[in-house]
Length: 345
Image (cartoon, rainbow, N blue to C red):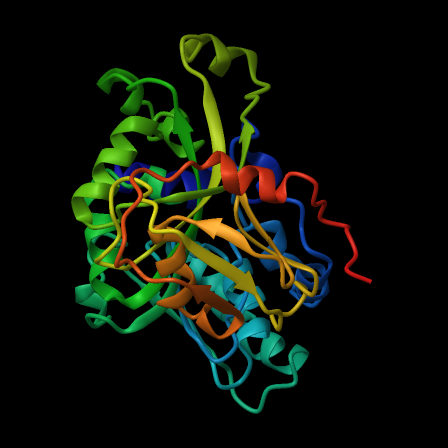
C-alpha cells in the first residue's frame, strides 16, 4: 500500500484539483495572520499540496517542529515564517516528486521571509520509522500532520514514534479523516479509495484506544466537519460509511488521567499569546477569556502549566483534595457566550 500511495501522489495526482473527492480539502477557517504567510508561499507549492485542515498551532516562536507527510511543503513553510530564524522545521515525506517541489523553492522562501539562512530541512523517509532519519528521543517540541496518518498502513507505529520523539510537554497537533465504523479489508485495498484519504481512515473508537495505548490519554478536539465525497461512484462504494475531518491536539504529559478529575482548580488566561488578546481557544469547549476565572479539570490544568503555554496561564489550586469526576458542563457554560470576534475593549 505504501507503493500504491507513492504512485497515487506522484503519478495520478499532479495538483490538488486532480483529487476525486473533497476529503483532502481544508475544513478550517484560516487565521488572517496565516493568510499573510500563505500569500508568501510559491504558487507551485500551494498547487501541489493536499490536506484536510490547517494544523498550525500558536506559541511556536523558536520551537523545533516536525511535519509528518509534508508533501510539497506548504505547512512547513507556513511554520518556517512563524517559528522565526531561531526556530527550525523538519518535513518528512516518502514521495520524491513532492519533496522535489518542496526543496526546489527553499531559497525562494528564505528570501521571502528575509532570513539569512533557511530554517527548514526536508527528509525522505517513512513516518512509521523516524529513528532511521536520526530523529532522536525527546527532541521535538511540536509535531503536525495534515491528512496523512490515515494513509499509513501501520498507524500504531506512527503514534509510537510520535510519542518517542516529542519532548516532555510537547504536542501533537494534527488534522485527519475518521469514520463511524471499521472499514473492511477489500475497501482498504482499493488504491483510489485509499489515496483519497478515505478507506485508510480510522474508526474513531479504535483511534481513541490506540492513542491511550501509546501514552496520549486525553486527546482534545479543536474542530470537526462532515466530509461530503461529491463523487457518485466513490459514494456508492462507501455508502455505509460516514466520514469526518477533524483537527486534534494531544500533549505528551505522562500524568494525565483517562477521565476528567475535579480538584477544585481554577485557570486564568493572563494574555500574551499573539492573536489571542482577548481569549485563548484550547479546544472545542475550553475558551479562556482574558483574566476571567474558569474551573478546570486536572488534565486541563496540566496542559496549561506543564507545556509551552505555561507563561500565559495562572493555575490556582493543586491536587491535594479530590472532588470526584469533573463536570465538563462548567467549562462549557464559562465560554458559551464568547465569539471569536469578541472584543475585550
